[in-house]
Image (cartoon, rainbow, N blue to C red; front, side, top):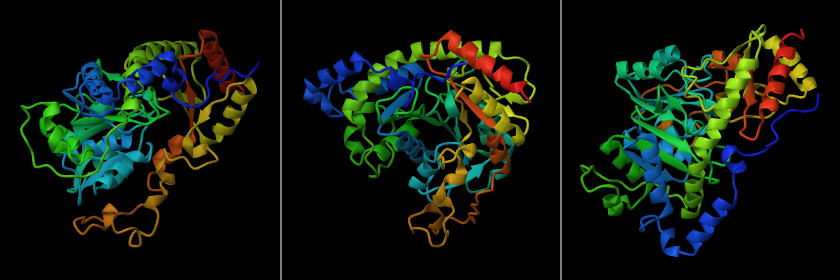
Length: 412
C-alpha cells in the first residue's frame, strides 16, 4: 500500500485554506490605511471581535496578538495574580502555564486522564487555599470533561477558564466551549484551526472580567473604554502590556472565520467515518470524548493498552503506509505540549529570576516541580497515537486509515 498520510503538510487547517480571499482582504485594507488603527471606525480587529462574540454567543470578545495573551487577559480579568495558584494540565502547550507566570501566579500541574485533558479527580487533589483558578485546555479539537471539572471549581469557589486555543468551533452540549465558564481563550497561531499567523481572542460574559482583561491588553485602555460600551461599571484601571493585534492579521482572521464551519463540517464527517470503519479494538481503546457531537473532528487518538505495544503497533502502521503522530512523550525531540519539557520549571527555584512568580514574597506555597510529578500523564502519553484529520482528506483516505489501524491491531 502506498503512503496514505494527509496530503497537507505544515500548518493548521486554516493555513491550507488560504486563497485569494485573504489576499483581497489585506489589499483592500492597505488601500484604506485609516483602518490600520485599532480603535478607528471599521477596523478589522474590532469587527472580528464583534463577529466572534456573536458566533459563540459571548457577551464580550477582544482580539489580541496571541493565545498566550488571551489567557493572560482571562487571568488578569479574574484578578489572579501574585500569591495565587492556578491549576493547569500536564498536557497542553507551555503557554497555558506561562500565562499564569505572566500575571504573577504559580502554575500547579495536574494529571490528564483518558480524555487527554484534565483529570477531575486530580484537580480536586491539587486544590489548596491559594488556588484562584483552574485552566482546562481542550487538546486537538476535543473537549474534555468540562462538567466534571467545572463542578470542582464551583465546589471550591475558584474561577474556571477554558483554553480553547486548539478547539476553535468545538461545542459542548450544543454550546461553544468556554461560553459557560468565567472566561476562555482562542489562538489564531499558524498551527491552529483558523489562523492569521499570530493572534488570539479573549472572551467572557462578565463586565468586570472583560474590563480587567481589556486593561491588561492595552496600556491606554481607559481612553478607549467607550468603544466597548458606555454602560459598563468602571473598575480601577492599570497599565500593563500591549497585546493589540495587527489589523492586517485581523483582516485575514475575518476571512478565515467565514471558512470555519465548512472546514469543521468536513472534518467531523471524516472522523465519524473513521470511527465507523474501525473493528472492535484488541490492543487499544479510543480516547474518551465527553460530547462526540461537539468534537471538532480534527484528530482521533488511540490509547494502547501497554507501552510495550507502542513500537510494534506504530511500526505496522508505517508498513501499511500510515504516518501517524505519536504522543509528544514518544517523540525524539522535546515537545512543549508536555510538562516534562517545560525547562523553566526545573531550574534551581531559589536561583531563578526574581520576577518568577514563586519568588514573590506574597506566595506562601512550596513549589516542588520535577519531571516525574505527573506519572499518569506520562504513562498515558507514552501509549497514545494521534491520527490527524484534515479537510483535504477524502473518504477513501479515511477508509485506508481505518484499514491500516485494523491490520496493525491484529498483527501481533
